[in-house]
Length: 144
Image (cartoon, helix red, strand yellow):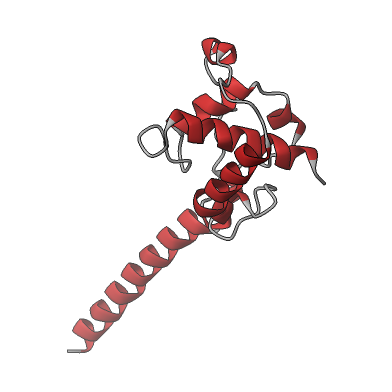
């Protein structure tokens, strides 16, 4: 009986350590989960919005952003949304020079296709809505 107790305790300790180790390794160091830079295909740079940027475009883009994007990218687009922090890979900061240097077509392609924790929106939004989002993302990037 004593041997069974020792074996049982050893199993629990070993099994519990394995679970704790698994949790620690998967959740403790999200910064170590890095990805290669996200580059849109060259042809995406040729995509141009057929819609004019006007107050209504920005208002509609803001509405979509608030509903679908702010939870990860943050209300002001700094990549600091509450849901984004739990993803392991920080969402894009639209104020960052690397984002600002991308073409509108590249941003359109990325939000259409997604990658990793960024979901694809090609079947969620019409093209006009995606261009409204691109316009609003650009607007956010101009503000501080």
